[in-house]
Length: 212
DNA sequence: TTCAGGATGCGC
DNA sequence: CGCATCCTGAAA
Image 1 (cartoon, rainbow, N blue to C red):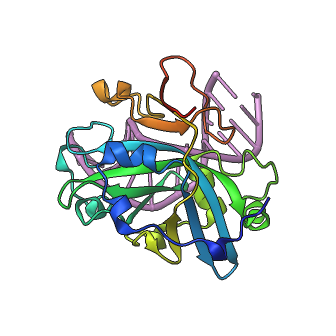
Image 2: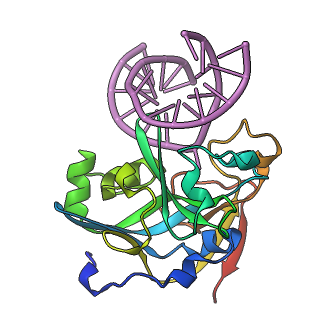
């Protein structure tokens, strides 16, 4: 069922100023919304990962590495950090205090609005594969490098409050096997059992929250 | 399962 | 210049 995005308003900035390891699971259940001339598309965030430079070998900002690409991570939190890997754009929320280069990667969303638009952008109609990966969701939502540095409290790209998940799990992050000890940090968070999660980890996953 | 695509950064 | 990367779709 499609959600009417006109009834949704962006989160207050305060929400995005939470410490990174608190923000990453807090973003689960929130809406990620992108408005373009083609229309509006939105998804519920179902999977995130925390990256905490400079001590995190898996982070682009490891060792305070400061380049044109990572520059925005050193700025005020609550803005978009987009970057291109191979042929795909990945979307992160800059977090941590100003001067601390931290971010939360959004790895998967569940489509809730503008689904036809997402299907057109992705040239495929399988509802699960539409947005179940960090490169897939940016293409479906129309997020690109023009969004770099955009404050996520404002149109056309913003995060809105949704429904908090019944259960959250955590485990190792994906795709960082060459990052030394950081490869095992349990900084990946997902909505337990959600079918739009990019990979279904069973071993070593930990359930963090289980409302009754 | 392997592999290319191709932006970005780093080291030689 | 060569190589690696927070990935993905197509080929084998």
